[in-house]
Length: 475
Image 1: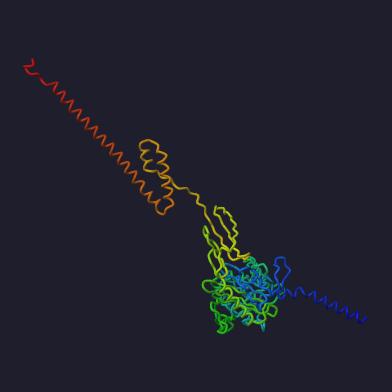
Image 2: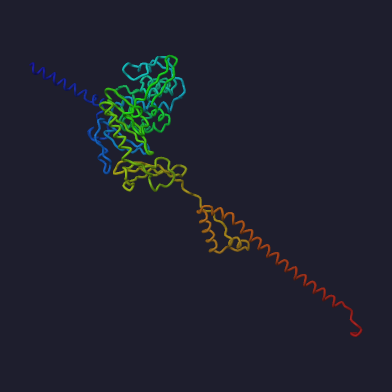
């Protein structure tokens, strides 16, 4: 009986363990069974290594990563990048973007109990007090450089019109607009929550959008910032947490900035933005054991993205480029190896929008959106000198002359400046024709006058001879 009792207890423990298996794996960022998630290989497999002719990567201590080109959106390297995992303080990238886009940067913000509640000992915060007043601009620096949770939360309350929940709705809506498929925000600072998650790919997409904003770039590139004295505290000075930017030992050539993050569930997380030779690369490394390992992974991934790839223009484009126009290829690669798929759409105005996607052995490497406005006007037919002369004489112009005139004028409409020259020379030709016709008519009139005058003189002479008296001899 005792053995049966022990067996039942063991079975119950096993069942309890299985019951908690799904939420625990989800918290630690292991793969989900959501229908929208791709069937990735185990975390130790780097998926980008499976593309033919693609630069290869060695494994990383970070369980998930994504390397993206900022300009083309091309994914250069990835390891289980769509696995949902706690993003820790990388959450604040989205909080910063939404606040910049929707808030009055110079407006005063008063700390409330909601924000101050996140000034918990042991977490990153500025130990604010209820009633303390900051400008929104100063708070953005405090959130991104010091990674202050109390500041991040109060930013959300303020920009959300007094409602933290409304700001979270704004964050999630913006994430969906950007194209995130594995992200949901349950707070504005990144504290652990069962309904708060993201993935390396989505965080790269959010960073790509944020980097388009000059103020965001300025904030993440700032090494040190001082918030002036407030109504309740003295001035506060703090340093950026990203070691690539502020520590000589870790200094990286071309660093723009980024964001650090850590919780027990999320592990060490790091978003990094670097640029060199006109290219900007985004690296997201998640769920790593120790920030030093995460920094080493990030350095390797930054070198990989900057050194082994290059951007080039998509050739043979027609129309006006509205978006894109570049592809990211392995160094020395040729566009001839790319495949393109285009879709056309005609707008109400008649313009044709052409969207073209470029792939390299199945991997997206860039896209372009062009606009073509069809030419509906026909060349204006000008009268040739032969036609003008024929019309002045009341005759139809010979067909050959008409053809020559149309051909000459059509060619003139294409050549730069010649159409205008033809327009200027035509009135001059007409003037010459009119002058010649008038001159000929005047000449005919003069000749007629001369002939009439001669005739009249002869007639007078005849009359004079007839009326002359005869001599006596003639009698």
